[in-house]
Image 1 (cartoon, one colour):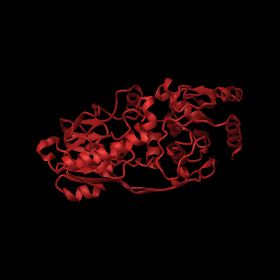
Image 2 (cartoon, rainbow, N blue to C red):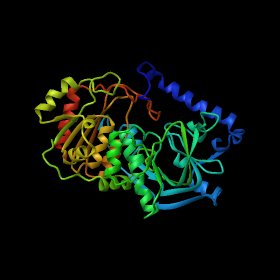
Image 3 (cartoon, one colour):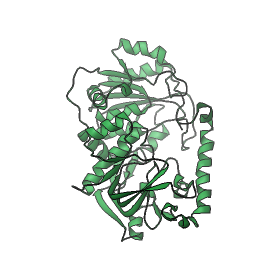
Image 4 (tube, rainbow, N blue to C red):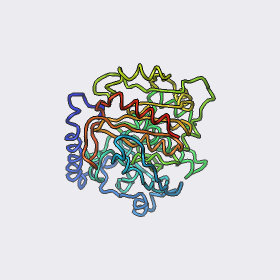
Length: 402
């Protein structure tokens, strides 16, 4: 949604519904005849679970186990209003067992990394997308045939999925952390290429720091990669659960450097550009925070290692909701985090990281605006309106927490 021009953002809910409906309609028309397109033919059907893909094509699809299911019991999260329904809904989750899907003559479609078997099955469990009610709404069906095919010889590992191309949070948890699943499932396995976003500076730095070797292939919306052997790790963060296995792997592979002297109190600003999820009262709040020893920080101006070090050493972090808070992955137990939301967009992904790290004192504040309980929140870039007195009271309570 953030890629939409500002004038179109209010229409996002309608555009999303149209996007889903169009995928269904185009798929209904072209799936039956798409086989005429050869290697660019649409998937003819789909499976909901990867085990079903393996059962349907036992000669071509194999599952390599990597770890057991994870039962997550969290919270309740502390904040205002108490027991907000988004956090209550996220308190209990079961993350399926981890595995690597091994597909002979597999196809990997688009920058969302849809997995298609040689028999024309969309493996929906490894091909999830935002806000869908089922596989028929998947954007792989938006066109009458797949994007142009690029043949890649040998074994290819996919670390790409929805959201990983341009978002720091999704890149860490939905791309990089899945390399740990690959290592657990196939220890010592060597691959000939890895499909993973790597065009930005932070992506290149993270891949190097985490010890993920190239060569890399950049996922593209206009490209289908076809591999002799395609390896696709499972995607355990589809529901923003930040499984402990993923969080622990990231903390181990991206450790602090030992640097000291970084500020203990951080305020993460999103600036004051309208429509960028800014905190509206920041000009009033900031001088008061500064007097309490806070330092205003834009993590995007730091190297990845510097971000790891700063968050590892931090004692208190205050921020409007944003991907920069993903760095609490590297914080120590005992850190205190205050996250602020617009009433039209509450996201539990940073709280689940705090719960996975353990011992984090987390508080949330939800500002002006309302949203029907249980309905998908679409105010992704709405500005945050919370009185300064409310923020100060929450911060005082957070600092006093034991």
